[in-house]
Amino acid sequence: MAVLVQVNFPMQGPWGTEMAEAFRGLAESINAEPGFIWKVWIEDQAAGLSGGIYLFETREQAEAYVAMHTERLAGFGITDVTVVYSDVNETLSRLNRASLKAA
Image (cartoon, rainbow, N blue to C red; front, side, top):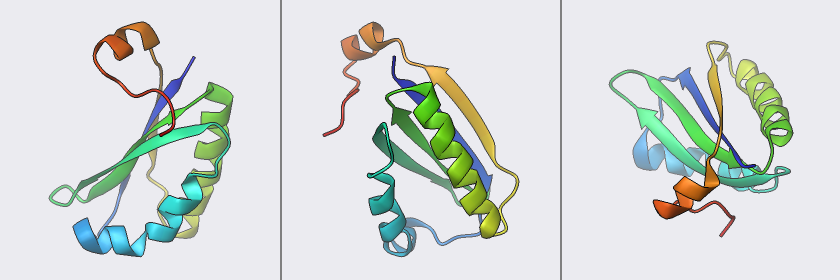
């Protein structure tokens, strides 16, 4: 069963196009993580929040990624990280056009 993970944390920028340029290497490296299917990058400049919504093949793979990512964020001085794991109801999600496989 696929697992959705939402990770949020405070960030002061960069945002938008600058964020895309600054984090391109990071984004490319995420593609190689075990069990990774996709990620939607999220940002709320007004609230000073950033993060992502990820889909992994298994909860174990998702938890391993989050442990590594949380440690990486701590290295940047970001420690106020929130994480929510949710199992995906694949039948209903497909009915509503969810893409549950890697492109």
